[in-house]
Image 1 (cartoon, rainbow, N blue to C red):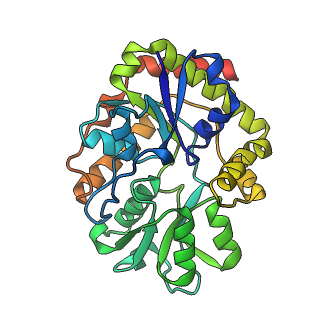
Image 2 (image 1 turned 120 degrees about the horizontal axis):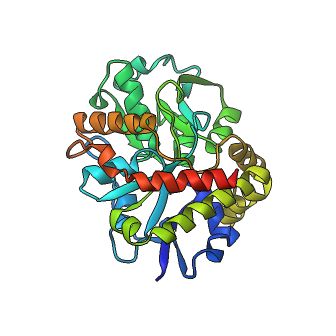
Length: 314
């Protein structure tokens, strides 16, 4: 049986694992599916809904069996009826990014965002961060004008005035910090833990326990290598950007990787509480068709497997 693993640079762990050959030593047949090469759907209007690309491809022929993303995609998938289950989470990534405005904009707090244009990579953790920040300020999603951007476009749009505020992430945020003085409207830490996370289909987990165990063990081994070799790991991202006709800064990528937690941990009650709050708020603000009970997506034995591989890696 061929195990299909989805990957892209935004999940640093899977992206490096793709290049290390570690999983191939544990699973006889592995097919790596680059999300960027799959047919992309039309963008969803960020005022009315959320894209469900990551979870959709779990259930599509030619997609993948296992994926790692940021905070929001599994909630989106569950709300759209996808029978997915959580596998594990990283430690908190509260230093990875934040909600910012230019220092001379006059925007000082999230409450000042009413009627403003705010850039996000819509459907990612950035959507949740903005929603949590607005809710904390007593605002609703409809009180701002969310603009769907990618990491690079968002920073450039903030600099040229096309955006009033932006949820920036490293390493892309580094270039904006260098170009202008920024004011932080809210850090990630007081809002949520912002981990990386991994999930799969329920049927895949139940029928392929050995393969799932192998994937998690390979991730633990590869993540330990990243922690010990952040510059070598950063080179993979730079080489990929160059191969695709772009550019990337090795120092910025190394700094970004040094600032991120690696290793797969079992899902926790605190994480599930954050996911539930996100699901409830996204639905209440018209971005999801319904809310869900996120704890229905937990298989206890998976947590035991993750804990065992985590202990072995240490």
